[in-house]
Image 1 (tube, helix red, strand yellow):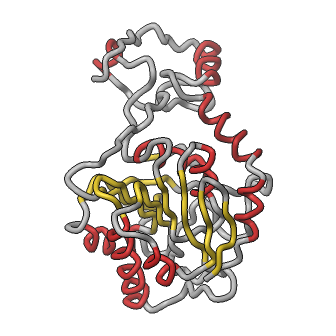
Image 2: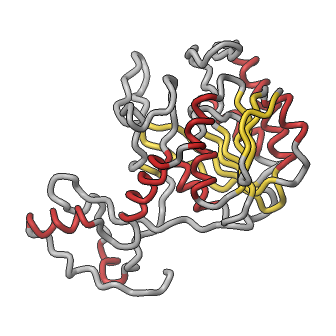
Length: 295
């Protein structure tokens, strides 16, 4: 175990999470995001076993889950990202020590069918809190989902059109707008990488500026990058090579530009692009009478 990178906002350790987590104080972390290997036999580098027997994988997961429960502060939030196959077991394990909030479905873009099964189309993001309710819960409002070709609404709000909030609609537990990280300009490592947009939203929901965020599976450093840009303190570890994370945190320019672009789309019922398309294709936006209450 070694300290790999440190700033005034946080510290990254190169370490096995089961060796590093016991060094973290109990009840000290405000938000945890965990994205473990999915046990699919992928190559994450030397020393990382991503092909364990099923019970061995679940036993390993339950070990670090117990540590995450211990370090989470009362009122803190835990987000656990995995395949539904595994999260159905881990949700049952966490339910009791923590309070279940949501099973969030993250839409999979460009997924492939599996013979003999339904077409898999989402990852599972579990959301728990420690205690009866979270200390922080600020889900960001979102623009209406619209057709990318004509700007028409993808959901019929029926009789609610006359009392919509001008800042957007309530966030649901199905997220279809999280982009996959495939372009080399935005990709920080060869293995799978989470979208910065996902962590931006998670941190908005469950934390405030100055809060402490922990990620026990550093990966490409997305959690740490988002936390630093949003004024959260952070800590975490990564078992594999940490060079890509160190470079990313030392040079945050591209991540900052992405966040600025996504944030510019928030704050209204329609994005600028959707408004342009709606005007072009004759969609009537005047049916939406905006109100300013939170209902």
